[in-house]
Length: 426
Picture 1 (cartoon, rainbow, N blue to C red):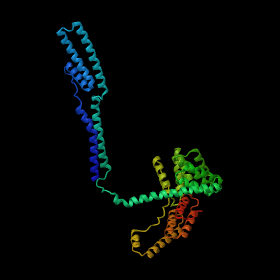
Picture 2 (picture 1 turned 60 degrees about the vertical axis):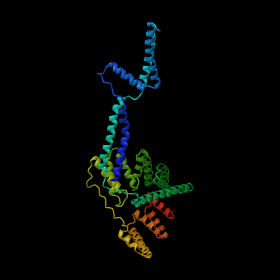
Picture 3 (picture 1 turned 180 degrees about the horizontal axis):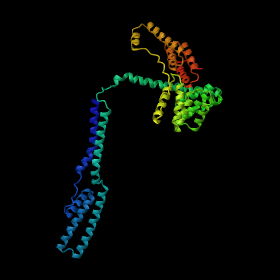
């Protein structure tokens, strides 16, 4: 709540700085003339206002000209000038006064007009008040004045987690960049290595460089005899490079891939997106329902496809009741509970190592029963590395890459993890 009060005070102070010069100038502005006043008096007031607004030189000239008019009258009284001479001199002086008066009026007109300022001041004041009231309203609607402060010192764990995630992302990118460099060199020596082209394209896609990945996947398509899986990879790189748009080349590659025996889910998913782009929502929903109903329960992409189906059906008012038959996902492998952590802290180093080894063995046994679990394999590889059993880690990596050989994105992730841990990747 304290921070809200401080911020409110700062806001009012800034508003005061904005409004003070505007209203201060209004107080200093000369009063407007009334229409009922004497015309001569109005002219005198206007002339006086103009003189006050002119520079010193013009005011001095006007004073001199007035003195000259008075001097002409005195010269007539003394008999120095005749009436004709005095009239000519008076006309000349009046001409000079008119010229000076015109210069003064031009200078006054070039200055900011008080009338316009009088209109602007209420507008500025109203806008400032509107922003203040709107800000207060938004805070009352969205703010939480009763929420306690969260000083930096109390957020150490959160900040460290963010930093670790950023460091992991940076490390992953470095590993992928090294993999791209190594693969490029190897492919120069052996351009017929289809797996090398596949891994190169997947690494470039993971780095967010789909336009470069197109070349690698296209080589894999040619070397494989236009295999459907590689056609799907090539089409995906085209789509991502075109900001999600499915152009004619990508559509042709997907259509060709759909005619093969490939079961890559990207084929039907992106063909469904192509139907959406054409405005054919029923066809896309039909295609995606078939894809979702035939998917493994633990497929990582399944929730996304189901969400797409539901969004499209809701937007178009299409009834999909009873058409989706998605199997429930198997339970996640549970990690250690808080009680397990506390118990481990009270163990001797030998007991703790034995407990960790038991947990790793249990994880390995569960993967024997359910090997189609990429997250579990990644955890097992890292766990073996932590306990120093690098041979077991190498074996787990080899088995994981064989298990998911047809899913190049997972192979790439396993390869990056293996290189990070110092395992062999070829």
